Image (cartoon, rainbow, N blue to C red; front, side):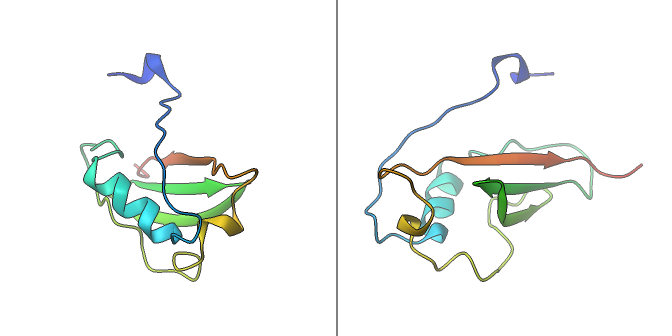
Length: 93
């Protein structure tokens, strides 16, 4: 269970409005934000406004390439704030 009892894990930082969504994930990668998980074939989905904007395979801190990553965060923010969440997808057994 680890630190799951403290969920949700909030983390705030600032970027320029014209920063890309990829720059958000680069920042989170440097912080090793996504937890490492034992095993194979698990993944994480990054969600903004109920829409999947990125997918991370296994313990990779880098998102799979997609059409959303180069868009500015201002496209997704509300009142200058971006609310990003992650969903963990466990491996099929």
